[in-house]
Image (cartoon, rainbow, N blue to C red; front, side, top):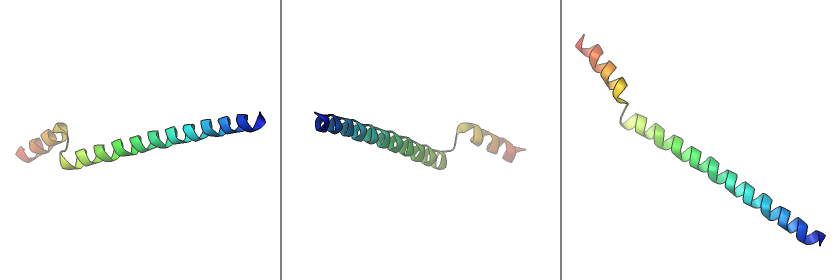
Length: 56
């Protein structure tokens, strides 16, 4: 019975580790996507302040 319990505990730990890696990967992917959006199309507030500075 002890062998089965250790197997179950190990499987749960493996599942938790995979979940944590998935969450970290999703956060990293979202961060990269947000950075790419900021580089490719800056927010309208920044564009408005830049155009106001050029007009004056």
